[in-house]
Length: 141
Image (cartoon, rainbow, N blue to C red; front, side, top):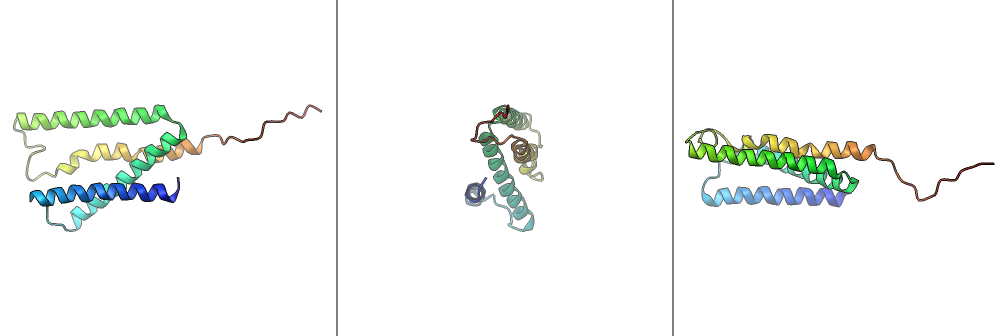
C-alpha cells in the first residue's frame, strides 16, 4: 500500500460524499450544515476510504475467500435494508421514512462491515510468508 492508493481512495470517497451532498442540496432537502452533518460526512469519507483500501489489500494479498465472504455479507445487508425500506413504505411504518429519524443510521452495520475489511486485510497480509527469489540450497556436506 503506497501513498498514491491512499490519496486516490480518499479522493474518490470525498467526491462521492460531495456529490451526495450536492444532490440533497439541489433537491432542497439538505440540512443545516453544522458540526453534526460535517462529522457524519467526515466519518463517511474515512470509512469509505478504509473500505476501498481494505478490499484492495485483500485482492492484492490473494485472499479471495475472505473478500468473497465480506462481499456476500454486504450484499445481504443491503438486500435486508431494501426489504425493510419497502416494508416501511408499504405498511406505512415510520422507521425509515420518518422525519425525525436520520436515514444514515440504517447504514451503520454496512459501514462497520465494509471498514472491517481494512484491519482484516492488514492482519492477513502481515501473516503471509515472504517469498524469496533464491532457491533453497541444501548443504549435505
